[in-house]
Length: 125
Image (cartoon, rainbow, N blue to C red):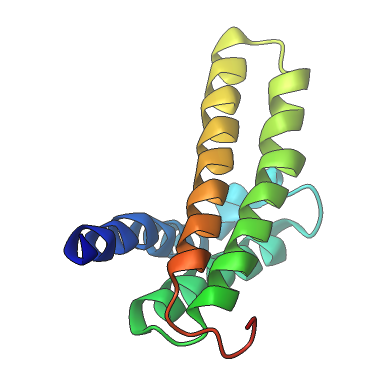
């Protein structure tokens, strides 16, 4: 069972690492998505995703990283994807926004579950 949970940790966190790298590589193009801060906010988000991913991979401050990642993901869901879902006139944009909203809600749950399984509870107890 421990092997499956260990595999699940990597299946959860590797996409976060990729999302972080993509944010940094495509910050200019993504800047209009940020409700505030534009390009700078995209860089900050990318760095946060990469930092959380590395923390979980190396097992240092991984509980704190997962809790903070959950906060980041729910913030993205509520401030970017939900408004796009509610305000879009194009059904294709509404569908994509619904997909992104539900994905981020699910990933928030995954981050909270990962925080419970984290090894390093030095900060959060």
